[in-house]
Image (cartoon, rainbow, N blue to C red; front, side, top):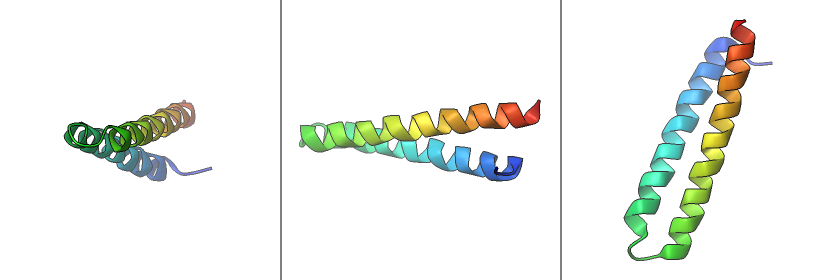
Length: 62
């Protein structure tokens, strides 16, 4: 089990990663739809992992 600080750090990293993937997907969508779809899928997966860690953080805080 990770410490609260480790969870917070990882949540921030995953949030940034999801935003970055999403932004890249939007930028590239005009020229490469397939790569854009892949980037959006990666953003979605990073976001899901982030949400799971937020839930874990909430459980540890209670």
